[in-house]
Structure formats: structure tokens, C-alpha cells
Image 1 (cartoon, rainbow, N blue to C red):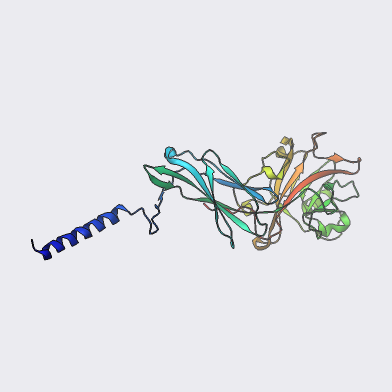
Image 2: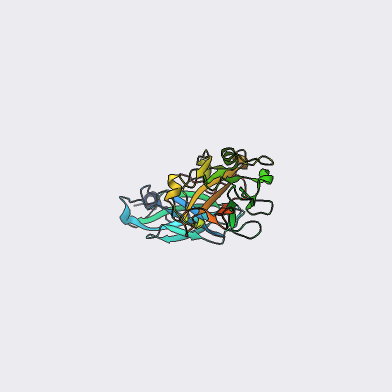
Length: 320
């Protein structure tokens, strides 16, 4: 065989081996890492989020049973926000939530979770589920450092609530400062609590100034005395804010609670400038109702409030 012919055969053989090797390595990227196969039926379901500390957000997700359950090894959670590097956290397969601490109140974070597994030495990943959330300010004290209280109409101490006052905290106001009211409380016997104008109309208040109404939702089903207990699955702007007020004595959800009643509120005129809040009305453990009575005429309800000082940040903005 001539040298020229031998070289031709060797060249063709080298080309064939290159093509074969290239076809066999479709799952290897240029850096030599294995490219994961996306499997949409690995176990990640609906995501939830909520603030569970001053600088902490807890994210959770449903474990969705999968026909590929045996492939499943762990979760990977990516925490990202504009202006910072992504943080990737591995979460054990037997867990379905993660507490993310040390967060910045000026940022809106995206939390993205995927299920990661292995099938016959092939890395597989689910499609990502994600939710956005931002820190809010939790209040258990008013502008003078006392428990947040709103008094019934028979009291001269005030029947209106400003969710976030000029003092950068909730504050109660009397009828002479009606223009500071966002929410209001009706009388001892009626005991309605909700949008200021609605309560004023129902109770026949005479205010000085027009209230700045907070729109409210119907009560949540959760029974809790801690704001941190509530994780939510959707953008709060998707909620209906058509509720006018809640009768704390007759509303079926309100009367079923043993710890406290929660609802959402928003202040503003449009999506661009809405500010959102979570309101928790605490039950009185001594009498089983919502009223606390310092004296007969100075009865009040106690509140915990989580308030988002930034506009158009409705806590959760999930992507599906």
C-alpha cells in the first residue's frame, strides 16, 4: 500500500472518530460539564413565601408526587436580586421550605427552586418554579411605643387608624383628625372594623377632614396570633379589595378564630402607587372576643401590622 493511500485512510478514520465522539457528547458543554436533561415531572409544586423575621423571608413549596420520584435527589434554591450575585443553596429532598436570612429591605428578591435528580448517571432537573418577595416592616407598637390599639366609638381616645403615620409607625386618631384615618372601628355593640369611609357611614361619625381609605380583603382562613405564621402563594395585587368592613362579632370567619383574624389592606389610587399591608386583629384570651376593655367606655382592639413602605411591591409576585 502506498504511503499516500495509507495517509488518506488514516485521515478518514480520524474524521469518523471525531464525528462519532461529537455525537456521543451532546450532553457535555464546552467547559466539560454535563448539561442536565430537563424533566418537567420531577417533584416541585406551588411555591409560597412570607416574612418570618426582621430580615428573613421563608420560601416553601409543595412536593408534587412524580412518576420519576426515584430519580429525585435534592432541591436547588437560587436567591437573586438586582445588583447582587445569585446565591445557590442545596436543600435536602425531605424538606419543603428554606429560611433566607440577612436580606436587604430595599430589594425585591426572586426565589427559584428546581428539583435535581439522576437517572442512569444522567443529571436531570425540573423546570423552575419561582416567586418574588420583599421585606416589609412589622409593627407591634404604635407611634408612642405602646401596643397598637383602636378604640370603639364610645371612647374619646380615637377610633381611626393610620397604618403608617408621619412618625413612620401606625397611629390612632380621634374624629378631629379624620383625614389621618385609613381604617376605622365601629361601636362596642356593632364592632365593625374596616375601610374608614365605610365604617364612618355605617356608624354616623362626624369627622374633621376626609379619610384616606385603605381597601381591604375578606378575612383569611388562617387562625394565628403571629404575622410570621402566614405564607402566601400569589401576588397580593391579585386579591379582591372590595370588602368594606368586617363585623368582628358576626362574621363567620372572624368568630371561628381562637387566636386572631388576618386580612390584607392597600392604600393608594392605582397599581403604580399602592402600598400593601397585612393586618392581624388579636383575640382577647381572657374573654374569647376581640375587645379589650380598660374601662367600659375605653374598650379597644389590639393589632399587629406588617406594612410595605415601598410602592407597587405587593410582597409576592410569582411566576408560573
